[in-house]
Image 1 (cartoon, rainbow, N blue to C red):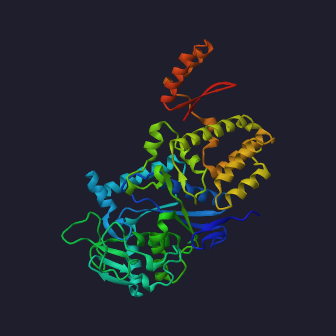
Image 2: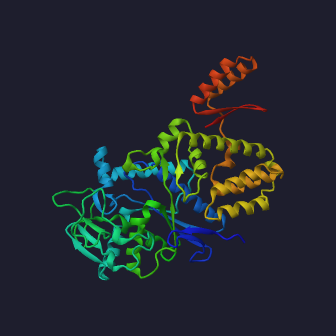
Image 3: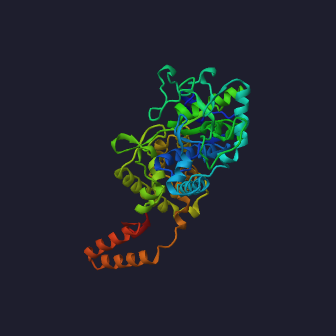
Length: 465
């Protein structure tokens, strides 16, 4: 039996994964803060989490997947200073906070659908669990972990043993928010808001009454309340980007374990940044972010090119983004699709059983902490091997359960649009007449419409980019 091993940030090593309930897994993935479009750096994290979920399913587990929508309480300074990102987005676009949150929630769902990311079993908005969050703050208050300031109710991190067990930071070296002013009422730089009061003299669009006054929840309390509400005693795996380790996830652990006296999630998994020119991570705060729409769709590229690109780098390593890497991914995906089309001709002869040796190799790769670069190498090794095409096709369909590249849909591709078909027919005639200048011009026109022209032994093929 090939054991599933995952890197646990909490332990700082790969560990064999065993669920709390045999055969069942509770998975919580930190969702978007819906004040703007998700950038492709964000989406890289969701691709990694999708591979994790697919690998769990591939191993035969039943997965209960919860993803939150942060539609209130996430401030521009992660250490509880600055403006609320949703209210700021509303002011930026002249809409209501509720309208902004709904618009960008739907935009996010469209993006993950384009990337063929499996939807969670449960979507939960922070604004739908306010009473649960208030109850959790009250529990912490009753246990003596909180204190009042002029702007809210704070968690006293000095009262929680091993506060930095996830981040392994040196508390003495920590300094509060480099980009915002300090809060002189905080007892410790690492203390964080559980409930924030609405500023005096202003009316927020999103605010609620509470035992401490009118206000709104802190960002961190939301995920603790939502994960425990929907997963209960199935707190198996919690995921997010590596930027969540030092603050957000560290604070989730502190407040949750302080409230319940129990361990909060057994495995913590984090995806690395997407790096662009100049060696910077992609981030909205840097104003250097690209969306799926402007980086791929408007360029005539299939969004699955980005999914394929993400497989070339292990999720725990920084991934470089450049025009060259996108072009390489586009060509790599087209090559894989053409290979699958060739072996798909033998599908009628297939018994739908993956080749045992290659299935084991593929499983070994993905069960070794989701090693997708190695898994993709196994895919190529299998497709270039001497096994018959029917077994290759059965194997690729089996692997596609993890890959999610729609390789089972290639024989269902729609006919070319009329305008593209006319250009393709004209190019075919030009080539037969050896009018290569016209052939090149028509190729450019076809590709400008978002299609790829390939000249093969069997003739010209025109494929959606």
